[in-house]
Image (cartoon, rainbow, N blue to C red):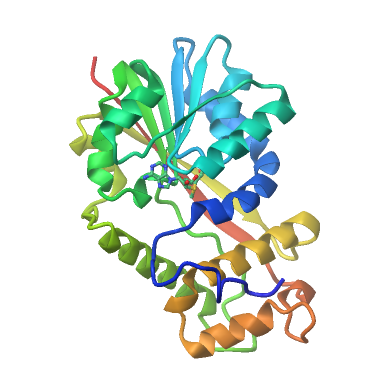
Length: 291
Ligand SMILES: C[S@@+](CC[C@H](N)C(=O)[O-])C[C@H]1O[C@@H](n2cnc3c(N)ncnc32)[C@H](O)[C@@H]1O
């Protein structure tokens, strides 16, 4: 599993190419079914009739809602046509019909047309931080809620970590520098969009969008070393993907270290190690439109 991405066609743009990522989203989606069903149960109430999954990717939340909340009408919304094709494929495979619509969180009119009615529940997983103006995007979402409706965003939390602090090769702190490289790429993406960075945390941003009852759900992902099987494959894939994405933000020294660690034919391949773990905190913020 070599570090791909040295020549992956992003050119000089820091913007993420989500169409390119669609096959990875596909590969990961079925493994997430249980987790999203639990989350859907925690977020939806008996009165949840109109819901949407914004920036849906493989639409794990849209399917979880459609398959666990009786009578709900869900729309899967994404700015990337390739993701909506993926959602249509998954809908056919699962036998769960799914309405899809193309819209950006940056475009209030397109978003309103996509959601179609005052919403009881809007989910936006790991997408608002990609908006040109995240605060404005939260405002766009809040405006689509029915009075008493709930917005839930998967944001914040921690980046996943898989490696021991010192690998015995390369400079210690390699994985922390990869996470930091990701933060710099995201800042560049925002600047490229002419965007406005948030200057406070998501709880405050939700309040600024006119919402109340802000709450946080923190879910711990903790798989102890040694990782094996699908967990090890996921760790290697997640690391290779990030190294590809953040390539330009790495020092030459770190890039070379990653190339050795991700080379299955080399002596330093991470897949041979017994000390990889998976630690992360997934955070969901929820807030309600005042009645
Ligand atoms: C990191 S993925 C998250 C996918 C899924 N919600 C999840 O949590 O796994 C971001 C998704 O948002 C979409 N996206 C990126 N920018 C967007 C925007 N401005 N408006 C709507 N969707 C966007 C991408 O195409 C991609 O499917």
